[in-house]
Every structure is written in C-alpha cells, then in structure tokens.
Image 1 (cartoon, rainbow, N blue to C red):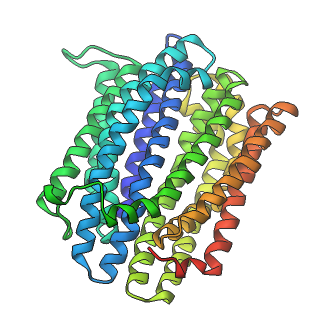
Image 2: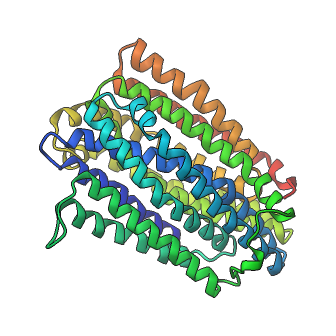
Image 3: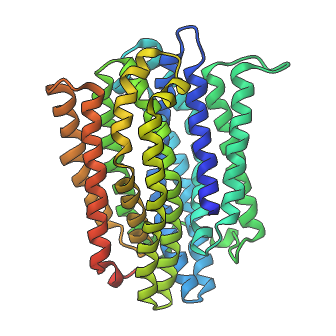
Amino acid sequence: MPVLLEQFLSFCVGLYDTLLAGHLGNQQSEPATVAVGIGAYVGWLATMLFSLVAAGTTALVARARGAEDNQDANRVTNRSFALAAVAGLGFLVVILPLAPWVARAVARDAEAIAIATRYLRLDAIGLVFTSLSLVGSAALRGCGDMRTPMWILGAVSVVNVIASTILVHGLGPVPPLGVDGIVTGTIIARSLGGLAMTVALTRGASGLKLLASEMRIRGASVRRILRIGGPSALDGLIMWSGHFLFLAIIGSFGETSMAAHIVGIRVEAITYLPAVAWAAAAATMIGQSLGAGDVDRARRAGHEAVRQCGLLGIGLTALFFFGARLIYTLMHNSPDVVEIGAPAFRLAALFQVPLMMGIVYVGGLRGAGDTRTPMLITLFSTFVIRVPGAYVFGVLLGGGLYGAWIAMCIDMLTRGVLAFFRFARGRWIDIRV
C-alpha cells in the first residue's frame, strides 16, 4: 500500500504535466503535449537503464535480509549507490547531443521538435538525481521498508506539481515560462528527491547506511549486481527501443494522433500504480523467502499478488471503457484529439488485467533473480508483435492510431500469458544470485 500511494502521486505528476501542456493555448497545446510525451518516453528509458542497478539491488538485499546477513545487505547498498551516480551522469552526457535526433525521430512539426529538444536536455539534469532515489528505494524495499521511499518520492511528486504550476503560469516575481516551466519544476523536484534519499541513507535507514569507504564500483558485490541487473537493463532497452519505433509509427499519422496517443498513455499509466506496487511487494517477499529457504511462501506470494492486483484491474477496465470520451474531453481542448483517441482508449481498456498480470509476475521473477526470462519475453512481444503489428494494422491497413493500438493490446496479452507460464513452472526457484 505505501508503494501504491507513492505510485499514485507519481502518476498524478505525469497526468498533471500532460494536462498543463494540453491547456497552454495559443496553438501551443499540441506541440507542447508531444514534447512532454517524448520527455516521458526518454525518462522511461532512463529508469529502464537505471534498473541495471536497481533490479540487482532489490534481489541481493532481499536475499541477504532473508538470510539475516545485514553486512552483505549494507555492502550491496553502498556499491549500488555508487553505480547509480555513474549511471545518472552517463545518461546526462549521452542525451545532451542526442536530444535533437530523438525529437526529430518522433515529431514532424518544427515547433514541437524545438520544444522537445530543449525539454529533453533540461530533463536529463533531473534524471541524474532520479538514479539515486530509484536505487536507494530499491535497496530499502529489499529490506521490506516501503515507507521511506514513499515519503521521499511522494514528496517529490507534490513538489513537482506545485513548482510546475507556479513556473508555467507565473506567480508574483516569477514570470510565466510556459512549457519550460513544466520541465523546470520536474528538475527541482527530482533534485530534492535525490538529495533527500542520500541524506536518509547517510544517516541510516532500515539498517542500511552509506559509508564513503564502501561506495566502490568494483569487487564481487558489483559483479553480482551487474550480473542480475544486466538482463533487466537490456530488457528495458529492448522494450524502450520497440516502443520508440512504435511511437515513430504513430508520429507518421500526424500531430493530432500523436497528441491523442500521449494523452491515452498518460491516463493508462494509472494501471501501473497497483501493478508496480504489488510487483514490488512480490519481489521483496519472494527474495526474502528464497533467502530464508521457504520456497512455498515464495510461490504463494507471487500468485497472491496477481490475484489482489487483478481485482483492481477489473475496476480500471470498467472505468476506462465507459469513461473514455469524458477522460479525453477533460484532458485536451482539441475535439480532433478526442475523436481519434477515445475509441482506441476504449479498446485498450479491455486488456488492463493481462497488462497487470505481466507486470506483477515479471516483478516476482526479478525478485528471485530471474531477469533473463523477462528480457526474452520483452524481445518477442515487442519486436514480433507490437512493432510489426502497428505497421500492418496502422499503416498498411489504414487503421491509424486505432490499428496501432490493436497491436499494442495483443502485445500486453502476450506478455501477461508468457509471464504467468514462466512463474507457474517454477524454474526461477533454482536461480543462483
């Protein structure tokens, strides 16, 4: 439940940023919405790459805590934090020169490209601090501490909304910055979050404490983190690459279709709230159970997490299906965006339960240290189903956004089914970390 609250606040930020962009007016709403959407995709890529460290951290800290080896848990945390700092700075160095290329690969309008390029470069600064907060949260969750990350990341979300609102519209001596205000508010919030996580772990939290002498990027612990996290990061890179190609296909339909897609994806992100929360719980319980030698508890934790999450998924299916048009009307001031987006969103509503099932089971597998299988599932579902399907249904058959979303829905169904079969077979039990 603490992770769910944290994810809900994070979701509100993404939704609110899209809402701010969609109501800027003066012909800026569509290019601004596209820019915010591209920024969200690149930010997602960054978090996927940071999972190179985070996935290994959760699995190893949970195993160590389950085996009551607090010294190893603390060693892994310190090594992970050092790796996170390197990962965040590395991403910043790479994205600065690549930002224009990324924007041109998706957007067609010159104004949208210019706004997106500036947005990406500024956002990358905040992502340096995001790497620290994400990896610190991964370590704490491995210990079973869900509340400390909730307070820190929840505060980040609240600050983000307040700062972005002030900077977009202006207040007192602060001039209105428009779309630049959205990303500047995000930088401020993410920076504070990374610093808060550093302070919390420096003082000591849940038995974990940052020590300058332990923050190294070499040794057996680092190799273990990277061995587990490597497939997870590659999984994220594969998924992001496929989704970026998917986004490029949608971009070929025009700015209106792109804006409709961004709105739909942002709203659909509410499905990820319970899915990520229950996946985090499953990962922690499965890792700690395996560390304690209780295999039956590990199995029960994974299946129970999916059952609980699936019940929420049924409610979201009904909300999205029956409220599609109202949701789009509230989110964007363009009638064309509403007309294109609402039918596709109604279709996607029917596949929210398998989407959740895939996320939770994959989280459980990663908690056990099985990061290779999710990577293979992603490779198959993304490049055999989603991308080719979007081109066939959306371009060749003229289905546009709706046709592309047909492929997206088949992808979600496939991932859920394959993740279930992998977890049910139980081969993850014997994976060594």
